[in-house]
Image 1 (cartoon, rainbow, N blue to C red):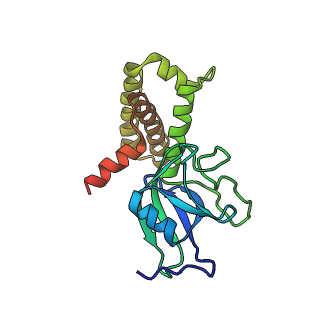
Image 2: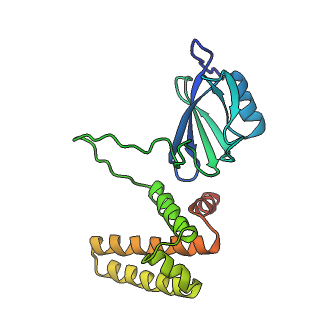
Image 3: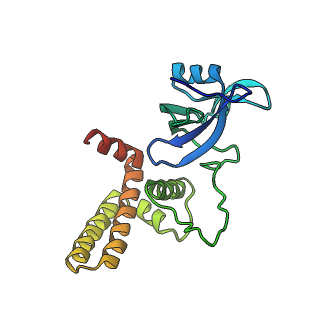
Length: 203
């Protein structure tokens, strides 16, 4: 496979959450770090400032378990699909790409599985750091029976909305159902990544 390193012997490597598609970070690899990544299954990069190899998360614990390494059509950029432990960014954020630039022509709307992952992050944070007046904490405090009851109620409302032939109502109620399902999954120790993996096996 023809990998095109730049004049410094490096190639940009983009790390992407394998489940949600969220872009986590961009770093650099040389032939040695790529070989180590492929051999160990953990993302290893080349530090341009320190001039040495570094395994992501070796000191912080925020490891990147690599599922797949893809090479772009020009052979000069790598895409790593990873399972990220903890945060990807050294600032403590989930992703290094957390700042949005304003632009009149931009939709600036998040979509897809990334939103589900972010909702799960908030739900899990509420569980660890309860917030007074939080509806999520109310559900956790009431327990699994209350959460399941709410899921049943929301599922019924989704059915009613569909029967009413109202897209707006259906969108609203389906979002409520997904939120309550997220709380249940968090309560039972599951993530959206677990569900995506299950669905992928059924394809």
